[in-house]
Length: 76
Image (spheres, rainbow, N blue to C red):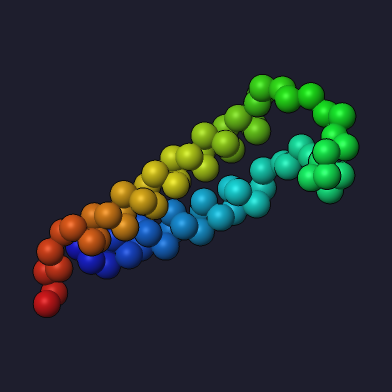
């Protein structure tokens, strides 16, 4: 059980990191200094699917860590 939780934790962490890096920022460096003229729009298509996938992977990551902390270890 411990090995399965470790695999799920590492796998979801890697997939979540990749999904975060694949998302578009939508703002340039100038936006950090207040000179952004962009409008906020709703997510559509692949951008929305990638955003939802990131949320699912983050929830799975947190749940696998909590499960590994709360469940007793069977090997020890």
